[in-house]
Image (tube, rainbow, N blue to C red):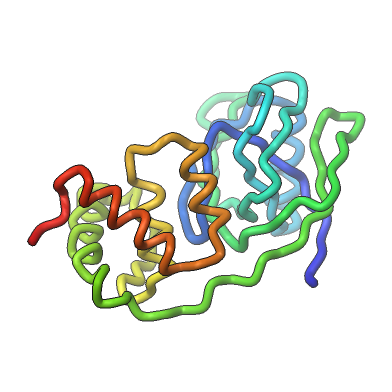
Length: 196
């Protein structure tokens, strides 16, 4: 079991492994966290908020989140840091506490990365559809593309589907790659979007 202590950033968003998440940081606790992460090359944890708000008193996060590293950053105006976070491994929070600064910290257990696996034949039609969606996204699309990898394809679909964040969270927590693809396939099929 791989344990580590990380700062937690509860958000109204779900970050998936290898995904990209643009963030606008202005609260002092998160500015300090971002500076430390940039200086030390260390990650922070992105978790969907279970109760509470993004700003002010620390929110209560869902127990499963994703490690995030800062891939790009810019400060277009004083006091506002714009970053693009890149998703790493998923984790489960075992214990959390709030520092005097108001920053939430957690002792987390890293979840095993999903092994690279081929796309099951029954879900093969998801790949050309995803290619088209990501082409439309241009520079905002996650790179490098791995259309041969069932986990990568599933996670990218979870990012772009028009579903509530709580549903996205459930998909993040799923341990089974094929089940995730099946849920995505059924959702698209129910909307009449799967080509024959």
